[in-house]
Image (cartoon, rainbow, N blue to C red; front, side, top):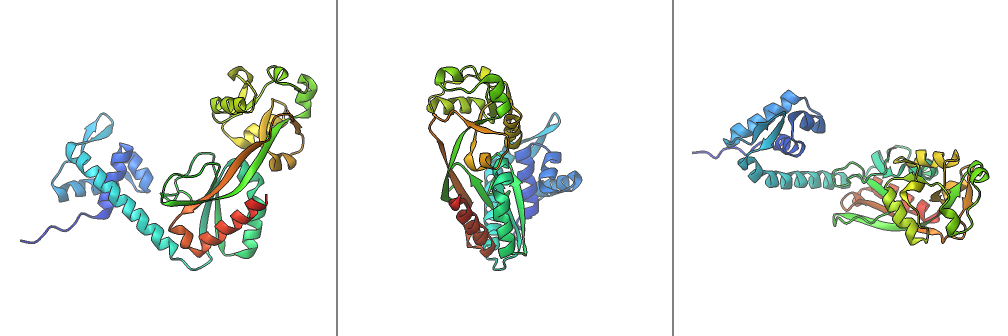
Length: 295
């Protein structure tokens, strides 16, 4: 009697994607496949194992008890496959190929271009993909190779370097100040509008730590996009904090609330521990660290 061959990894990956997304169509989009192809892979895995892994629930799919038992095992296999890919990437010795950098939209727009111009001179064969996003991209799943963030990552597989401490102040447009006046005390701040960016409750809590008691009624306009929020400030919609380097490059804004202490925040440069052995990743990482440290 011969042992049955181990299941095909592509079939296991199809099962994992379907279990995590809850539908064949969503799993197919994640893996870049057609839905019939992915459906055949899941069916092939069920046939190879002699188990029913999913049951239809309305328009979606639900794991059977057997499927739930195998889900964690498949996740560990997926993590091992990703680790293998990362290790293989880390062995690259050529200063060429693509490096994906993720940073906030404001940082990507105002701070990164001069650094990338220098990088192009140093390594002209590199292809740089800038992912301008304010959410946390997953370095573990290769959504980015290097991340610039204001929080230190918690995953032990990632390495991070504190490269700079940024400074920010509050700014407003001259047209806004001409209409509403320049606030010169905490009491006068209550009569002013602020432009919201991201989590407004977090902004209110942050302002409170600076001695500014703001409320939601003062945030009459907001945007999740940093560039849009900054343009709203420039167009006279209200007051908002901004990195002093960005403000220095922006016409039509003035510093206000200069009696409030400067806002300090860290710049963490992060990459995967295995990728950091790659010459191309190390080159980009070190150039970014040097440029950010110099401010």
